[in-house]
Length: 102
Image (spheres, helix red, strand yellow):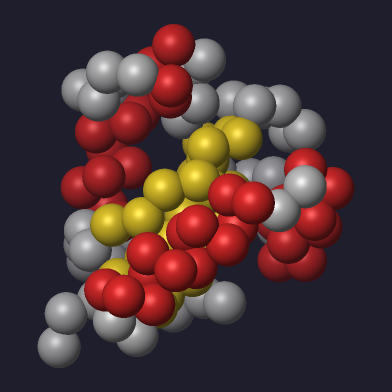
């Protein structure tokens, strides 16, 4: 079964935020961290995975990403800090996929 993810990355704690979605979270995070993706994350040095959700299907993934992007900054920060108070870089694991999170 294919996995889909919505994720939030940050430059630092309470820093610049980026919201994205993918079906390959470890691969996408590696692309961001190594600067392979031109654009916002590279320009603003956004490399820390601070939050992610596993989503049931591609349509729901896109819908959730759009929803989160419309949220105000305080809501996004509360969402992150609900499970990651210190804004630690989340371990996406050696197995290739992170544990399920919501």
